[in-house]
Length: 341
View 1 (cartoon, rainbow, N blue to C red):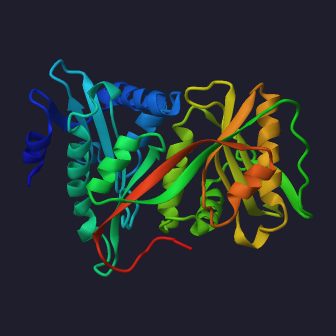
View 2 (cartoon, rainbow, N blue to C red; view 1 turned 90 degrees about the vertical axis):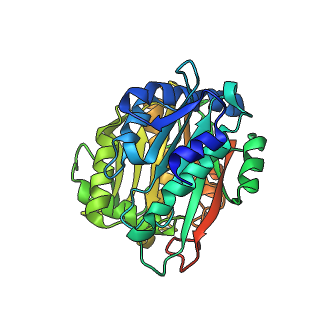
View 3 (cartoon, helix red, strand yellow; view 1 turned 60 degrees about the vertical axis):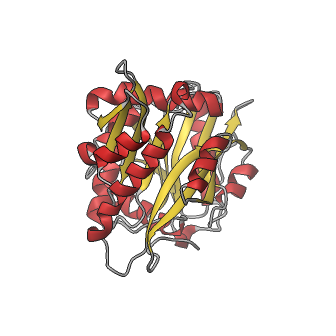
C-alpha cells in the first residue's frame, strides 16, 4: 500500500496528510500538549524542543514527519519516525492525535504509515540485524492507545517514570568520592570527552544502540546549543584528574513548569560506579536549581534501570509523578543490536 492509499484508507472524509514543515512546529507542539494535558494533567512539550528535534542531524523532516489536517486546516495529529542513528535498528515513533479528533481512525493511520516509513531502514542496517519499531512515551492513562497498539501487533516492553522532588529547604551538600572534583562545560567546553563519557555510560541503558563518536559529538552539540534552557555552567562534570568520571546535564526550566529544574542526563562511567558519585551529582544539580530559585526538580528514568538509577533517585527524595510506556513491534527478525541486559 503506497502512502496516498494509506491516508485514503484510514482518514475520515475531508482529512488530509502531508509532510511536516517548520511552519507546523507550533501547531504540532500544541497537539502534543493537548494530549499531555488530557492524559498527564499538564503540558510537557516546548516549541523549541520540537524545532530542535526537527532540525537534528540526519533527520529528514519531509521524509519522516507527517501532519494530518482537519477540513478547516487545523492540525489534528502529528507523527515523527526517528531513524537518525548511524545503524537504525530501532526506529522510534513519536505521534499524537489531538483529543478533539480521537476515535476517528487517525491513530491507526499513523501506525500504518510509521511502519511503512520505518521499513526503509532495512537497507541501512546489517542483513543479519533485527529491526524493531518502538512507539515511545505513551502515558499510562491512555488506555485506548494501548489497546490500539496491541491490536496493531505491538507489545508493551518498557516503563519509564517522570520523577520529581520538591525543595522544602536547601538540598544537602554532596559528598564527593576521593579524588573527584567538580567542573562544568563553561570551564571545559570541549564536546568530545563529554560525548564519549555519555556514550560509554549509556551502553548500560536499556535500548541503547552504539553511536560512532563523531555522530555522538555532533548530536550532543546540536542538542545543547539549540536548547535555550541549557546553559554551559549548568552542565556538571565530575572530574577524576583530567578524565570525566560522570556528568549531569541540566535544563534551567521545564516546559509547562517554569518553577522546575530538569535533569536531562545523569551518567557515571563504569569504573567510577558504586562510590556515591551519581548521588553526589544529583544533589549538586538540586543545589544549583535551588540557588537559581527553582522550587522543584524532575527527570525521566527507566523504571527497570539496569544500573539501579530508580533506587538512587528514590533515596535522594524523589517520587514517581507519572508512568509512561514503550511498545515494540518486530519488523524483521535477526540478531539484536541493542542493549537489553
